Amino acid sequence: MARRALMVVEGHRSFCLLYVKAARRLGLHPIVLSADPTRYDYLAAEGIEAIRIDTDNIDALIHECSRLRSTYDIAGITSARGAFYSTVGKLCRYFDLPGPDPQSVERCCDKFTQRQLLAQAGVPIPAYRLATDAAEVESFAAEIGLPVILKPTAGSGSMGVRLCPSLGELADHTTYLLEKHIWRSSPRILVEDFAQGPHYSIDIMGNAVVGIAALDFGPPPHFVYRELTYPAVLTEDEHNRIADVSLSCLRALGLDWGPTNVELRWTKRGPVVIEVNPRLPGSPAPQLVQLAYGIDLVTEHIKVVIGDEWNLHRSNSQTAAARFLVADRDGTLDWIGGDSPAAAVSGVAEVKFYVEPKTPIVRKGNYRDCIGHVIAASPSLARTEAILQRAVDMIDWSITPFPAEKE
Image 1 (cartoon, helix red, strand yellow):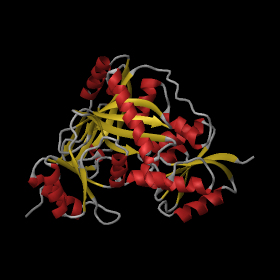
Image 2 (tube, rainbow, N blue to C red):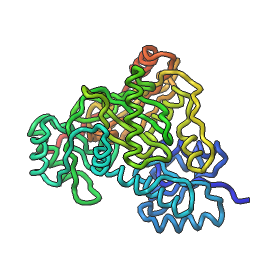
Image 3 (cartoon, rainbow, N blue to C red):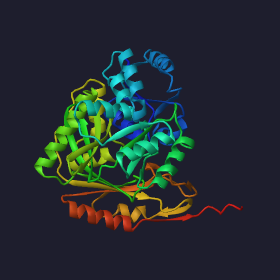
Image 4 (cartoon, rainbow, N blue to C red):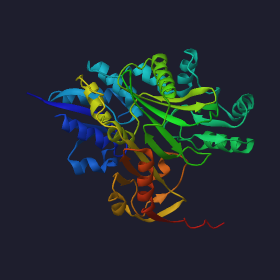
């Protein structure tokens, strides 16, 4: 009998490792398809089969999966990167496997189209306009009123996203987006009203709200993660309104299969949706969900992918939080340490560094500015916060600024 395999199209940092380990626990043989498997050095260390292939070429992927079917029973196809969910949907359709609707995913991943569909369905969103040049950005910002947020219509991790409270900052970031941001096609910039209020991240599987987290960012104008906490402290009414708005997003976007992540802010007019992603949130959110609720989101997602019965029963009730370690300057990382004593603090679940010494650090105002995280869990928010702070205080690093360029 052929061995059951799970195909994973690309990954993201150690998030891919969560998928391959979960697949193994389910008795599946994980195979990673990647344009550059060497980016995932942990795959070789874990003895994970990885195949080099152009993952932007759907025909090449179909051909490779067809070849692998002569050896394996392909039980499911998924990805640990949202950018490849549409591709995954197309592969699942071709091989008659459970998977997301590729058209719904593509509409959702275009933030302008997503905004249009949400607005048509009456979902509360910020005022927005689509600009393609500097003159339109300036004109639309005047219509909406400063401060505004400028962001590309595609992408994740706050890449290219910036709060612009003045005309000067608006002009500077417009120039950056038009001249330096990497576009797959012609530039398309969203000009949005800045929805102000607490930020929440909602994890959904199918039509079930699994958890609602509070998400804090570092100082503006960027949106670099600072802390993620499950569950968010909410009244019953706030929880219900957030859940209702989040599920209305799924109906508006045709996302009725698998995992979804919704981000919104609680403003003066209630919940306002910032973004919908047709995927699981990235690491460390799944680890936090498991600590807080006892639900392994990655494993349950794989069960959905292979058509097995999935289970969102809560077996835990804790407050779990992650504090992100963020580089404080550009330069070369000389050293980073303190992870061992931090990990030894009672209640700390994980201390992870994303970078090695001698790594060049160039801050971009997005998720890549994070150089590590600490995860803690306990029965109460106050205790979890205290544990996190104690552990983080034990961690330190040194960054030597780059030599000044000679004029």
